[in-house]
Image 1 (cartoon, rainbow, N blue to C red):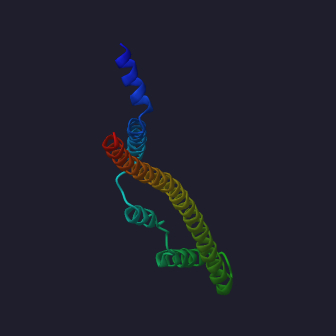
Image 2: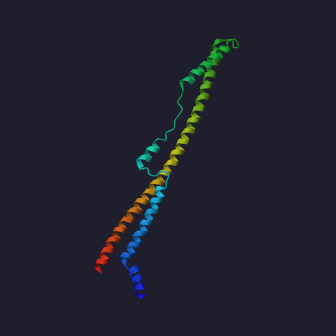
Image 3: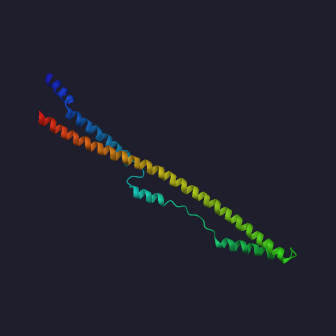
Length: 169
């Protein structure tokens, strides 16, 4: 019974044994960091793939359509033609038609710009969300790399200490 207690006491005071336990604990931490990193939704992407993914978030803006101008002018011309008898002078009818054309173009353009602003806000929100996810993912990866490096160093130190300690006995 005494030899068992002496053996336990020797193992707990043995620097090599403590170094092994420390290396095992550090490896457990590294394994936990790896599990957190691998459970992230962006795993296993690297930084270049994530940068490409971020760059692909480009809003599709509605350009000004020349057909809108043609439609507005045609509507103005039709209005001028319809009001030609109602409005006594041709110049007034043409002016009314042009005013209607300009009003339609202003309405079209304001709707188009409002949609473009909404599209830009959505794209910016998506980019911001993905950027924060990428930052969290890269931080988890760095934590794993650092933990793995610490585990390797402690394991190597433990093995060296174990050989040195037991060769000295």
